[in-house]
Amino acid sequence: MATIVYYVPDVGFEEAEKTRRIQQMRPHLPRGYQIVFMSPPDGPEFVDIDDDVLQAVESVKKHFPTIGPEDCDAVLLGEALDAVLAAVKPLARVPLVAPGEETLRLAAKVGKPTSIVVMNQMDRVLAQSFVDALEVKPEIVSIRSMDIPLRELVGDLESAKATLTRTARQAVQEDAAEAIFLGAMTLNTLGLNNGLRKELGVPVYDPLRVGLRLAGELVFQQVGDVL
Image (cartoon, rainbow, N blue to C red; front, side, top):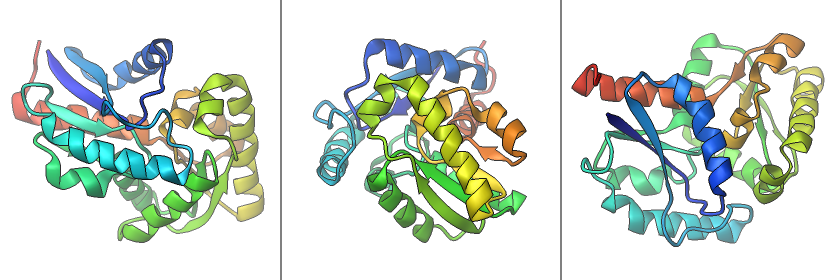
């Protein structure tokens, strides 16, 4: 059995929400691979304000060096904007996948003007820093905020779906976006990606799918078939 750690700085996800996400993630990995949620013991409940970001970075810096080959075969950051990547990259003892970076690299190959949809204004700032730091990326025509804190979003997924649909539609109609990047892993678990592609007629980039598939491939290239 191969193990991929899905690493999030937030500690507030209930077990039912973790199970829901794992069920959606599992089809993107080969048979014989398992996904394990992991968070730093002293991480913030949810990363919703600037102080939460500071707490998240400090907590993952302390915890990340404890994750080694005895725990997993690879780590996937559970962040579409790779917010803690700079802090944890030099500390990684197993292969580390930064899904946001990898997904924008893929989007650059497609080459369509892209809008990034994020949950709230704090994430909008993080998204701008994320984009500014990357050399390989498509043209970013806008960063659209849904204006919903993460703790509220996970508490009302149906409302989140409606807001995401409306925000993505505005990005295409008002910002001339020809592609959408869903800038939060939670948004990529709402089951809307295919529907948005059909309704809007544009690519919808999913860092969760991209990250999982790359993590699985990284492990496969090292150990081969685990069945």
